[in-house]
Image (cartoon, rainbow, N blue to C red):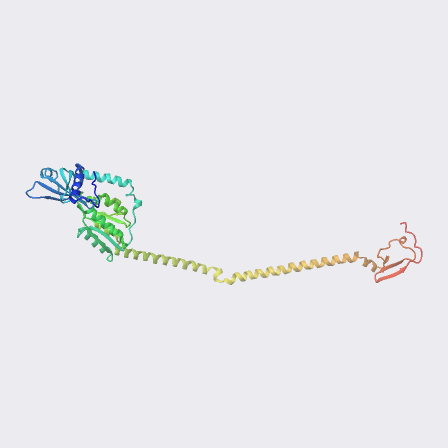
Length: 410
């Protein structure tokens, strides 16, 4: 039952400690897996003390066990080994600490570790953490390279020396961490997140020399693998030798076979780049000379053409053609005008021939009434009627004196 306490009726520390002990005592025996961070055998006692640590968390528990439980374990338990412990939690209420009283210890063998790694590999691959589409390209020349490695390790020396030999001006930010043992995962993850938050760091290198499968286990830890997958900065994995393949190699953006190979991947070689630039300049000059030579030849060919050698020649020829066309046009117009004038003259002659005025010129006359009507027959006028006679030279007025005669029957 829960303790009934209040501000007015608080429980003493010993009561709370005893209650915690009672709750822990009801937990019963449990199986616990962890990594042996420390193993202590006190002389004159039959009890061994083991500090059992969680590789993926900054957390540890104290385990006590009799020598007769620890000594028969094969292979012998050493610091850094993975073990499975069957123990009953105990609460020391006077000190306020928890410990595990172990009655059985089983080492996690290499085969089991490799099987666990393979199962984790399958899970992470199913989540898509290893697909090539997630890989990010490395910058050509990073401003600062973040290096996570063992303190004063050969891997650090290899990366720094080879990288500076290739590009002397390259800058590094080195974070030394534990690269094996119980605290390796926590330290590497913290260093990775620190460098990932640094705005000047353009690439991060995880470097470690070779070692046994157990030594490289931290780099197959799920916590570390997921931390590398979530990093915003490209990560280069340089763990162990060519034959080693921890899980971090599969999730990293670039896998280097060794720390020396990592230095070749993160920075270009100054001499090679200078030589490449020289070859590029030579190709550019050759291409430019070829282009200029080709354009000069084309320009010379254009200048040799008649239209450019003597631009007025074409104009002179066209001017002669234009003069010929103009003369031909004048002749055609003159001929047409002359022919039209002849037609007009001929037509005028015909009009004059058929005109009544020509008839009057031959001595004929036209008799008209005063209203202009033409008198064609004598019977059309009466005695005393005034008429007009139109002659070639003008008109005269006459008056009919007598009775006009009858029409000619013809």
